[in-house]
Structure formats: C-alpha cells, structure tokens
Length: 327
Ligand SMILES: [Mn+2]
Image (tube, rainbow, N blue to C red; front, side, top):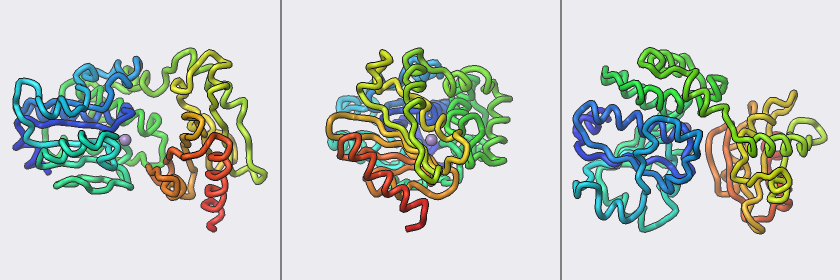
C-alpha cells in the first residue's frame, strides 16, 4: 500500500459522486501526502458543481476536475496517469454512472481502493479497506501515521472535516480511540475542529432549515414506537420555498427522537423514483438498503427505490419492520 503511494508520480485521485465532506477531505488529504513525496496528483469527482457552498469552504475543493472521458483521454499537461486512487467509494459505479468513464478509469493501473465501507466491492488491484474506521479520512490518517509524515495545515483541515462530518462530531458508534487519535493529530497540525469542520457539519441554508422543520413536523411514528419516518415531497419543499436538493440533516434529527430504534427518510426523486435514507441505533439495516439495490454501513444506509413516494415508503417500511423483528 505504502509502496504505491511512494511510487506514484502522476496519480489520479477520485472520490464518489454526490460528494460529501469525507470523500472530498480524504482525497485532498491524500493529495497532500503525495505532493509531499514529490508527486503531481490530479483530483477529480463526478460533477464538481455538486460541491455546495458550505463544502466548498474545505480548502482544496477548488482543485477538483470533472470526472469525464475528456479528462481521462487528455490529462492536464498531457501527463498520463500512472495510478488511480479511489477514496471513500464502495464500488466503481459510485464513481461515475457513465460506463465509458468507468472503462477509461479501469484502463489506469494500478487501481488503489482506499475506503471504510463494509459493503466495499474490492474492485482495486490493491484494496485498503478498513471497515471499522469511522471515516475514510481516518484511513488516510492511518497511512499518514504509518509513513511517519505530516500534512499541510490545509490538508489537516480537509481531513478533519471528513472525520467530523462522518462521525457527526465524534458521536457515531464507529468513533473509536483511533478516530480520536487521528483527530488529535490533525488538530495539532492545524486542523481545528472548531473552524471549517464544525461549519461543514452544522451550517445549513435558510431554505434547508425551513425544509428540516417541515420534515420534522410531518414525522410519523410506528405503532410500537420503534420506527420514526418522514417523507420529503416536491410539494413540501415548494411550500417552504425550498427544493428537495436542500434537504440536510433530517435523518440525524429524527435519530434523536426518544425510543426510536430506526429512522427512515423518503425523498421524492421524481414521479417514479424515491430515495430513502435509513439509520439505526442497533439492528443492522444495510440489508434493507441492499434489498432495494442500495448499500452503505450497518447502521446508516440508503437506496433509490423504483417506485413513487407512497409506494416506496410502504415497501421499505415493511422490509424495515422485518429486519427489526428478525423475520
Ligand atoms: Mn466516508
């Protein structure tokens, strides 16, 4: 693993589509390590325009190229890529929905897959998957500490943002002594949790705040009180002057409802598709997401269901009930 990092001269670092702070921060942190070793990494992500204004406060996000066949066919400065690093990405399909892009990515060798998702498909030539790490940023820090090198202040901020975001401020079950050691080391390198990382975790737009309020007001509790769920429809969003894309923090807010064992949030994608986010306090729910073609972590997973909002809600709640009751 470390040999691939030391050998790289022109690495391409990619993170998953619909980027989150951990995927971006991990890629930026890895780039900082590679640069310190004399390499010239290129960062890419599907549709960098999806990096919202808050995530853009992570230093280095402006460096992301769009992950397209053009980029892969003609790399910057005409220097071919000699290694592909993917971070925080469980499968090739999560890098790009475009088959041509995936084919071009597979042509770069070796592929080094660095991740922390239990559902990782081990699609790399080298797979460094630490399934008990709380964030991909923690895995990058493990590499950093194994190699005995430091990282720039901006690199530390980016990695800390990934740690803080994926652990919800060091509150998830996955947060371990190692996670906190990583955070302490990054803090000492200038990556203070109180700055950009806190902002990335907590700040939401006015529209997103109103939509969160509407979604919480519409929450429903199952008869036994163990499942709390809500729906975010186009209509609900429009009523508060927001778009569904503004939704943020709804699953986490529902998770704090007393006695809720599992939560589900259903988002209307269009007339025939519904996205669901699932969270659990104990029983595994990744199997429920997988049943609908999705995936994720044991206690936090999601899927896009090929059904309208109300029908998808009923289907997923039925499966969820089976999972919670061991049927
Ligand atoms: Mn992650």
